[in-house]
Length: 82
Image 1 (tube, rainbow, N blue to C red):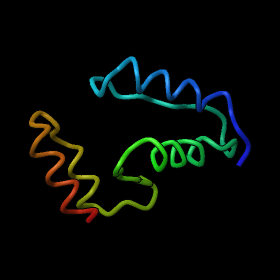
Image 2 (cartoon, one colour; image 1 turned 45 degrees about the horizontal axis):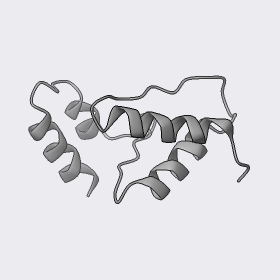
Image 3 (cartoon, helix red, strand yellow; image 1 turned 90 degrees about the horizontal axis):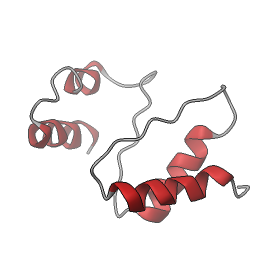
Image 4 (cartoon, rainbow, N blue to C red; image 1 turned 45 degrees about the vertical axis):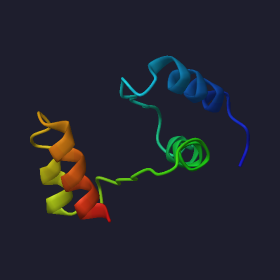
């Protein structure tokens, strides 16, 4: 994989946010967004969950309908994704 500028920006976000914010990455199709984010997750975290909403089951999509209780949200998501 090519080293991309976005990777260093992801590292900065991780350091600055300290786990308190989410990150949205958007851009043109098929330019490597998913590839670089998955590589980042593998390298920078002990565990991660990858969800492709175009292939996600109804149960996984349903987890996102109520995220008021984040503990419950992550328990449900973990149960659905293993």
